[in-house]
Picture 1: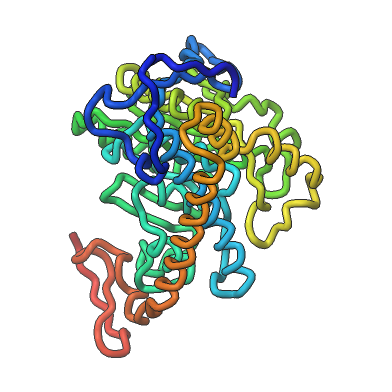
Picture 2: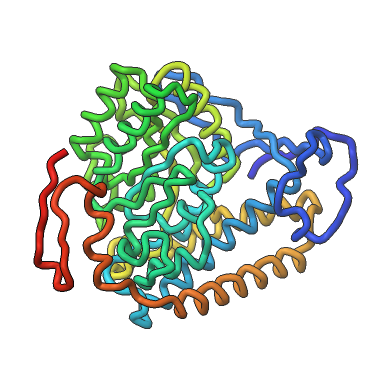
Length: 390
């Protein structure tokens, strides 16, 4: 990150970083830091926000810890998949952690987020637990979707997280529907509908954006552009890969999605805009280290040098580590202690998730319809069927 300066002359009192993982409750109780984003924002039909982002020591340390936790979770999921404890589809998020954490830093749990199948870290950012995440990945009863959703269908309605969707691009019109409900109920909240560059050419995305613009819905479409839709480079799939301009009549903003503070600033800016004016598009320029899914080695259509180059120059965790060290908020040893604690947390969560039983076979028939509507199965062998009209 570029030029960094302290706004406050108050010295930072050194203490172990584990004590600084949550912001202090009283305003002004810790020094403010202003950081300039790594690259400027680029706007379409809108003036971009300032590159100067306000943060605090506790926020930076919480960013480091939470992104490290996400990274460790996804690395562990890789191992569990290779051990055949996770089956089916599994799409990992390592490399893209700054998007999940940066969004969360500027919104509340009353704001909604909906995403595609690369959803584990978004779920964790929304307040989900490691045990619930690993149990769901392994198809266990303690999972966030009772072991029935698996990797692609995480869900946490009480924190405004509406999935976890397997059909490419299908979550965007659902997200615009959530935004319609928010406006109709006058909630003063917004919906962030996340999708990848591979889904950016889906027709339903443009249909949903059109109606959202007509009705001035508080919908923010977030293209997590990791530059490869499955194994296809963006330039091979999109005539115009400037996804932040794709809204045409809807303003857009291109953001360095590997810079957590840039994402935080963009999310704050977009929420304020959407509540007053309607939809907006954010393009997060990010990168995934794994392949598209666990069945994709991720190295046949891109070079290992490309991957290692992004790790060395743009890694979101390393950027925050350097910022913390440059401000002497913690020592390198203390940050290593955080990473060790995170590793233990992940290991303990996996052990606990493994103890959870598989779902009962009868669970196949639950949560399919709202109770009292549609077709329901009865009887010991579930062969008796009753239809109830609304």
